[in-house]
Length: 190
Image (cartoon, rainbow, N blue to C red; front, side, top):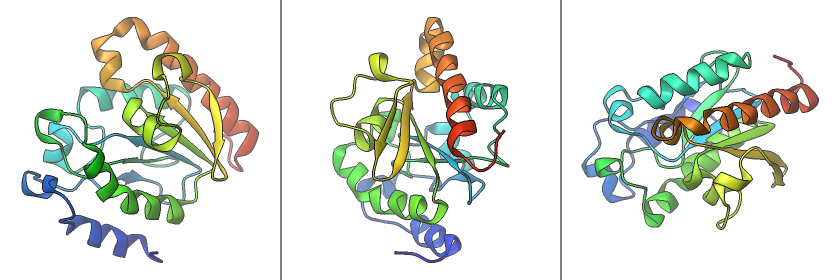
């Protein structure tokens, strides 16, 4: 267990636990407020994220920013954004189970240091890993689960919304539910 976010980030950026280290440009550790009450967790970095070293900076990230900003959240002030895996899987494929397992300690330590009240899983992979392996993201998004003393909700991945824009209203409803839950359980209302 780490006591310092800086130590955790330093060690994570030197990680060679799986094959993804051989093809990455950057480890994408995370971004945001290290004491945020709301933690967003995606599946893994894409090409733009690998280049910049920051999660959700491509087209999907722009959409995510619009949705979080619409409910008075901001990646630089009151939330933290991380991923299950910290290195880009080749051709943006889903991270393999062994890659996810190799990275889970990094994420567990991030969660332990941040101590969020609410975790939002961005997409199927994150929801399967953190909520339940058989989650049906298209049916169970926007539902709050309690697990390991955290309130956890899954929503549709921003990249999936770009592929299927008809799902944007349903995903936005998830963000409205999130804002209500934040106002209900968090010390800081937004």
